[in-house]
Image (cartoon, rainbow, N blue to C red; front, side):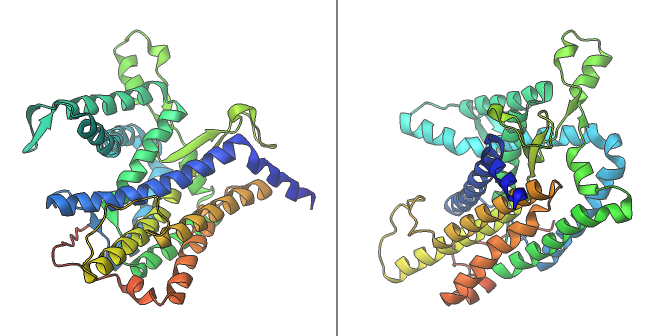
Length: 378
């Protein structure tokens, strides 16, 4: 009973910030994926269409992830600078993808002039796009120089949202297959990898710091201000919050330690959220088309519009809090998907079965004539 009092530390600033951030990112990822799909449909621009996973690709993800995890476990020091460069480029692109809709909305609302500057990749490149690109690149450079955890989180969140928007699941059948495989994957690499590899592979990779190529270049050129550039970097493959955030602390940990949550623990459940959100969107739209009612502009805040996402989001919240509680009680790393998969997938399957919609979710709604399904090999 005494150990249960440790759960009061879930009310410390760091766990609360981590939980609220993960929930907000999952929610935002699902809606950005829906809006991105509608943008592609509206503009008839499928050159950047999302990847829709089939069963074989879903089964390959845990295998490829395991191979990548082992490669980083054994060769991280050799490839860390290359990984940092790749991550920096991907982060710049993802941050641009996340910010552009808001910039476009501001431009439209205030009627800002946005003249074309040049052609880039056969597409017009405007002045505002150029400024936004500079902002994103500048943010990544600031992260490379400082390595600050806030910038790390910002880039990690943008990577998560961009991933969920571009990699989609066609139905609950493929989704369940992917989640169950990753459920087993997460449990093995967190709980059992030490028996086979002599160390907890997942934790070792998650906590390793990469060499900073900016520091390496500055050091080789003897540039001034070298002491201002961080030598090691936390890659934005996780969100982190210092345990002593706002003066809070969890007993048994050093004040300088960080609470962390891997991007996969946000991105994978967010793919389910995006799937059920699209399902609700299609059901509403199809029923309105049958009734010949003009489609109103959807209010994304309306709980009547998107029913399943609220169950999935509530399940995600419960699963995440349970994972954090287990970590505090056991004082050991926990495979978050052990808790997140049942708490998100379970309610969706049960509720859809009760509503007699499981068959539609399981196989996926048929595509409309004016829609295009775009499969791409991974």
